[in-house]
Image 1 (tube, rainbow, N blue to C red):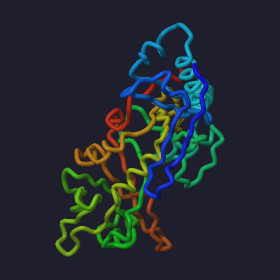
Image 2 (cartoon, helix red, strand yellow):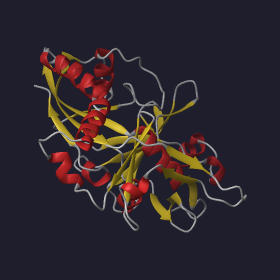
Image 3 (cartoon, rainbow, N blue to C red):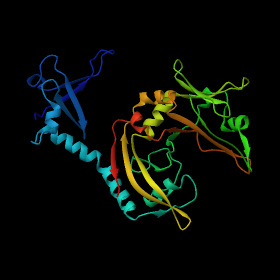
Image 4 (cartoon, rainbow, N blue to C red):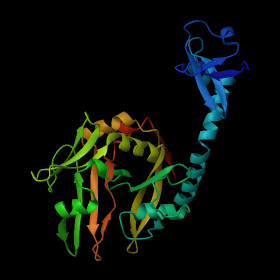
Length: 315
């Protein structure tokens, strides 16, 4: 390893591009060599990719500067995941734990309470930068990705109340719109999604000629929301057991994903693998409550949206 000094500068001309140079660069590189740069803990590490076999250096059992750097980066990046895995393993070792409430959301609420996480409506990841997504393993339900209201400035309708008034239905004492919307076919309310690549928008359309396209999301907004929510995620599977008439959860395994492949999001929408759920209801006081719209992915499709993941057994 050679210790050097980096110079970061811009030429005096107003149109000059930012530049970087490393002192003594010529002593370990030739013209047309490709260099790789890693930034870690406020230091830059420069590698000559043309001259070095990086795979061999990293996998070699003999100590070398690159292998030591990669191990150090892995140790730092895995500190929080390992901490969380340890906590989840302790929860799993307790056996089936009783659900805190009777609802579809009970599995996540119960786990977050056991982890000491306050229940809130924040869009930020749940545990020190890691998003937690719990699910009942044998139901085969779609997995929640994120909730995102339409961009009303781009939309014909300007509120969830307008959507409910137009497409809602009476169910018992409630007036609601609980439905799934896909790009593949219209649902029973006549709703369908479509992507307009020319204006870079996801649009929801009605088969009512008087309505047509009524809400829209900028695809960039959805991409940013996906990256914000799922930079790093633990997908936690549990068995649902009924013990003495009460639901219990046995948390048992984790799938650990990082860095979603944003370009895949639009493709999966077009294929109907990612869909949207409306969860709108007018309560007894007359106010409208919207729990979505929630974008969901088919249960076994995470590997289509994320790079190869790691799986862990908790028991």
